[in-house]
Image (cartoon, rainbow, N blue to C red; front, side, top):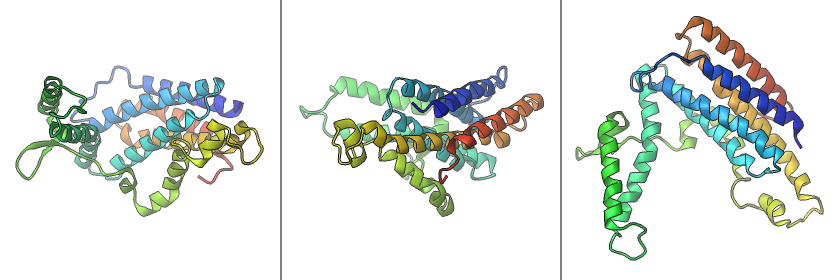
Length: 267
């Protein structure tokens, strides 16, 4: 099923892998060139996601594709927020806010757990819990760029805004509804009821009912993957002119393949 989309994702995965090879031999500083390093991680994720989606299709794992499409969209929303300022230091700080956010949210949960350590329902022993806290504190000291100080002078991890708040209103009107659409096929919903439980209100094969939304989700994934790769022109235009020319060529190849895959959809 979906042979056209399968081939497009396979082609894009190979081109993105080739794109990543253009950075071989270039060393980036994790602090001074945090945006470049973050984007390279993004490229590797795009390569893996676009490679995984055809494998899922070929193994009839259709519902499992939606979370990967969602990740392709989230990746774009985040990189767009990072580069939505021309100030280099602000871009770097936004990268650190994104990277520090996950640690900060984890630390908040540890603080809640600490208040319940003497209860039987707590998952951790005090010894195991203290090891986790010590690990977090060590990480803070070795990655100070991911931290700030609170009003009491205590070191805390930086945080990033919620996904929807990373967008201006026009950007949100253009794209965020597509993200919410994809999410309706990730969590239990009336749409998944028909497919997973064969609760068939329409007397159709469940695969037929999933066909249209999955085709649209696959098209959306191609669109957002292409948008993300497009940022390379801005981010890496100073690194190795000949390789950059190749990156631009690869981007246009990817964009053309993707564009034909989402034509006909309102994106």
